[in-house]
Amino acid sequence: TTDMLLRVPVPISAAMDNAPMTNAGSVRNRGGELLINHKNTINRFRYEVGFNVSYIQNEVTGLGTGNEPVWGAYLEEEQIVDFVTKTAVGRPIGSFFGYVTDGIFNTFEEVQQSPQYEPGKSQFEQTTLPGDFRFKDLNGDGRITAEDRTYLGSPLPDFVFGIPLMFSYANWDLNIFLQGQTGNKVFNVMEYYLNSARGGNVYADLRDRHWSGQLEGMGREFFELNTDNITVPDLRSNSNARNFRSSDFFVKDGSYLRMQEVRLSYNFSKSVTSRLRLTDLTVYAGAYNLLTFTRYTGFDPEVGKISETEGNNLNMGVDHGNYPQARSFNIGVKITM
Image 1 (cartoon, rainbow, N blue to C red):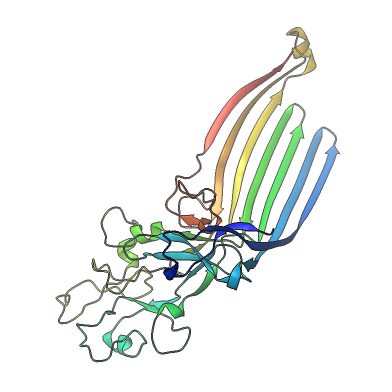
Image 2 (spheres, one colour; image 1 turned 30 degrees about the vertical axis):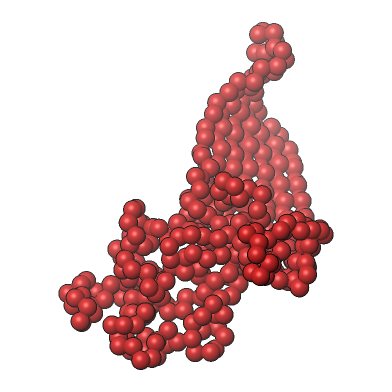
């Protein structure tokens, strides 16, 4: 695809509120599809088993003059306040971008030995304290800056697949459709709200997963000690350390397998339909979105977009706690005269 419409970054000296829309981008999609079907009949039992899979590799090949990267999915949550996707030549569209966490500080000594330590400040004046995230110094300059951000994964799946199944015996039919994808990442914005001390609802097990230390001189000598195998930083109300800046803490595996449809039907025999002066008569019961198997921590791994971003591919895979797809059940009768 060439001449994509996108907003090309312009210098501040241009005095423009918004970058202009320009036919400037190009992207290449390469992949393949495989479809396998098998059907067989054994006496009165008949079955059909299928499998289809699609592989796609998305790569941006041009972004206009200078090929300047395009940032997207700006979040205004008080500790994030940043773009969380970066589209650059040689990468997939809307790739997630941010810091890499490396555990949580337990002591002031650990802070002192890290790039997050601020020389000349006392331990109580430090921005980073025990209980805060340790971020990796990826460029090796001895500091944690915006230059230490990196690509954290793509919202585009490596594989999308489907498994249609049909079993029939005598007058009964059972149809099952499984659908899923693998290899994609989701930026779960709700991890910020459900794991922080900003107020409102939190995860039920947050007490067990958040850091809590007994810090002398900070009025916490008698706090419950919780420093082993924890994944959430200290629940301080201030945001000086910006623990919840855009990082791999939010980027989750979006792979899933979903039982999209199950339908059981009974087809009445010709002796019955003829007496009723019908050609066919079928009753059925079905369920949709019945089960989902996933390690994703949000409501639904099949993430939609929030209002006003529906056509913006730079916002793919950013989950604001979108309402999940409903599970539904139905029954029906199909009559052919």
